[in-house]
Length: 213
Image 1 (cartoon, helix red, strand yellow):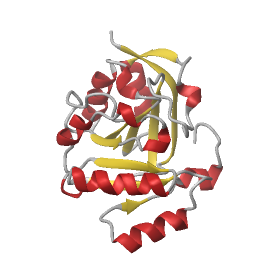
Image 2: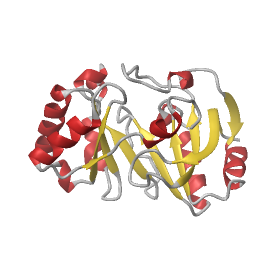
Image 3: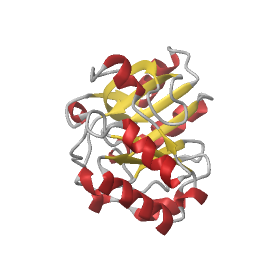
Image 4: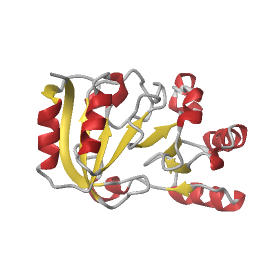
């Protein structure tokens, strides 16, 4: 039977995206081919435990959730993640996938809400962006830019124009926690009248950098 390597499964509040603040079960898969300079989940790069997909779904169901987020690491680095996503969708909850955008998303179950990054220059992983993925995004998906500085912001604005992103799906701008002042990013967005949703990592304001929240 299919299995995934899992770092943790936990129940908390969603700290980002369109469902911010809503109680959510998080399924964190182990492993990631990227090494972003600001990564806050490096503990998921290795280790973890192999679990049967049926057991993962059963553990998720025990929380009786309305929302489930599959995250990492980079979940799609495990081929079995695609089956896990479909099995979770069969449970009739809203399932979202947090992915780096460095791996093809075409095989992801269309019922899944994809939250995909475009890696900015300051991340150190801009070269890993798979721009073909943009055309595969659905209107209910979300495209996220993690902004480290003004140069990242200007780069993100250029990409929005180049790929006409406002017509693809919802766009999220997020400042690096502890490095870029959220008010600065807010001022830039307002000044340029950008069609984006600015977000902060709510969970870090609630619980700091504690893992598993």
